[in-house]
Length: 380
Image 1 (spheres, one colour):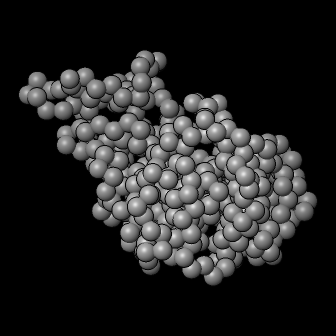
Image 2: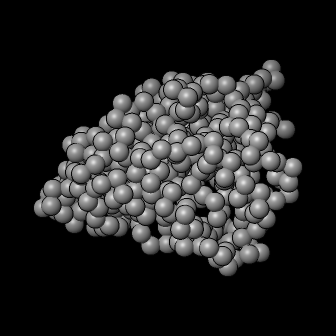
Image 3: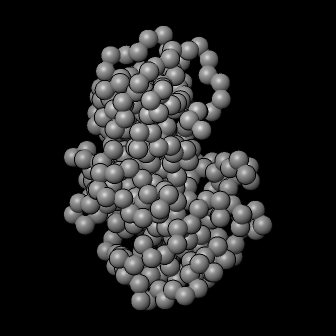
């Protein structure tokens, strides 16, 4: 698929300008005069803004051809709508990505949900369009997936890595896993466990229902690469909303090129990532490894508590069984305390946390239960 990225970007912005969510924001913007370098001049948009609009306008818009739902604590469900043109564009764009990965003429079993959620559809349509045989199995039934994989000689399994491990435990073996739906390559050692269990190669991908699949790994396993036909990725400081330098942590912000009925221009995902520029594209070398919803400065360094979860998971600890406590030492400096629901501290954990966050843990408390939220700041 040969895409004029600039032309598509202008088309998406033009559609957004006509949409109520963006109408006022983009009132003075001339899409035909924009370049991709001008993207940073456009205002970001949050999920909350979309939820407010959809709460007042719940019915499908004119031109909607496919609908998905995502759980929402505000609405119960957040709907996403795609037009016929969106669907055609998305399938062709992702098909181009899979062809670049060499996925042509393969037998693919998709074990993501096809009901309510978008997961299965995103992979299925693109892999089929790329020239593969695709079986829409859906989620669950690990033993059956293992049996079908062997009986029909499937080359590729598409599912989340946790379920892939269950398939492997049931005897399933697949040369290739296309993973998504949960933290994977951001969890130290997770990929190695999955690959050993399945007997093949595992590649990660990132996407959301609102955006589609916007980044994916190459066989080189050198980070999640922006899929140029699907999106433009940025990593911004969540406080200043300015781009961070290469190697610095920030919020992943996405402009989807596959969405015109529900345009997503500079959509703030709330996901934590590090960005690098390679070959003219944005690459997420550590994948997505936390949320920016809670941020605290400790010893002058920005700490996102959720970024500890994949580190803990890499050491076999419960990624939800921790709490970050920030206190003041007697001399007035910050003290970082980590509470863990664990019987002991695995060797190397503190070193891994310091490498990931740039911060040294001053004290650890092993507890049976945790009270309160993820972050407790006692300095004020």
